Amino acid sequence: MSTAAAIEARGLAKSFGSKAAVQPFELAVEPGAVTGLLGPNGSGKSTFLRMLVGLVPRDAGAVAVAGRALAGDGAAVRRRCTYMPGETALYKELRGDKHLEWLLRGRPRAALSRAVEVARQLGLPLERRVRAYSHGMKRQLLLAACMGPDVPVRILDEPTEGLDPTKRAEVLALLEADAAAGGAVLLSSHHLAEVDRVCERLFFLNDGRLLADERSDELHERSRRLVRLQWAPGVSAEDLAPRLRELGAIEIRCDEARATVLLAGADPRPFLARVAVDDGLPAPRAIVYGELSLHELYRDLYGVEGV
Amino acid sequence: MGRSYLSLAAAALAYAVILELLLVAAILFFPNFEENIEALRMMAGISALKNIMTQIEDGGVVAYVVGQQFFKGCNTLGTAAAILFAVGAVAGEVHRGTFELWLARPYTRARLLTERYVAGALAVVVPVFLTSATIPALCDHIGEEVEMAPMMLSSVHQSGFLLAVYSLTFLCSTVGSNPTRIALVFLFSTTFSFATYMIEQVTDYSIFRWTDIDDFMEICVNEALLPGKLAVFLGTAALLYVAALVAIRRRVP
Image: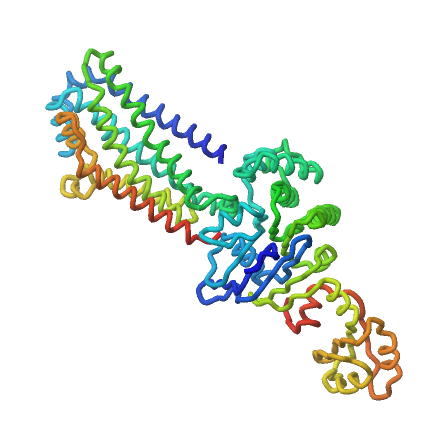
């Protein structure tokens, strides 16, 4: 395994009974960047992250985190990174500050000071018992514990889940700052719009398979070249596809009366003007252009329905 | 976690206090018991109880004391404590959803499990030794003489038994996820086993045959442990602990 990547996973696989939770793929996370692992619920994100830190034993493959190969139950790897679980259950009887102390047992004392600082920055009432915390506050407490230690890698399972937009922005800013300082951050999410602005690179999972590995800017560029055309029911987009190609479509995905078209350039206006005046095409009922949701991205770029 | 160890220590203290109160009451009652032992034996409806009375009559204050402290106190309260102290070790974390959080810190699973095992085991056996250590002084108070050494040897034997029960519950906690159900099954089973001790026809099937007055009297009279039985207790406990280590290694959050 190379030592340049902060996280390097090769051929990791995990099955639970007959269900393949993660199928083998390669993933490398560079230092100094936030990397996103995206996918719908049940796509294998959490299992993959747990395998990285040794919480779920792998069936096959190899992992190295911060230059340390995963072996045994992963304690050596967990010493070189922090991990924020997707589960939010905490010890409710503890106060926030005591809980941070517990979470950071085995770390240098400075980690606790830094975590307390982050928690205060996020406005967490550390003197209150965790049972009085909201879901979002519990997530922030876990995040603060994750940001405390001075480690080169942070692995976070849905760090923005349950947070309001303001807190979400604060959390993402923290992660960005950590990456800017040279750290590697790998986070999972099922909300593209929440994380893609901070992630330089995005890995898309579905059904345990790696669907795509894209640079965020390239993905945005591609999504800007997508146009969706919707005709009246009864019109077959499939029949119109050859004509759309002639008008400038590079790729076309058809679904009954809807066509998703990938254009060569980012400006759709010349193409749309040609569509509007073309005698061979019925007039579309709707034209959608712009940023994509995760659902649309999976459907329109990767051809996966039901996300 | 520090707080849960504090809770465990508090529970162990409560268990020790109850054991001691039972012991104090029993020892203070001894003169009266001794006077009326014949009448009490006549009143005992079950042959197993009659046997116990005979053993006490033959063994004197020592038989009475080991019967009260070990056969009655530790076998009932101690077994319950062993079950309750072990049952939440891992299943409790799974049940409240903190299992992943517990494992996610930079420690090996073996270390995390061993910390829990040792803390619980100490909570089970230390009160047995502490309360047994007060027996000579308490007996002195009623004008009877009981040596410290036989009481400590008996405590070792009793602790071996409790450790085996504790380790079995601990293993079930390591593979299970519902501490209440595990506790109920174990408490019911051990109560049932204690009840079978009292039934002449099936008494030999009771696990408490391994820690009854005969055993403790043998230890006290010979001032030596019962190596065969102790080896079974400690061997069982060690095997179950190793099985728990293997089980936790495979467990997925």
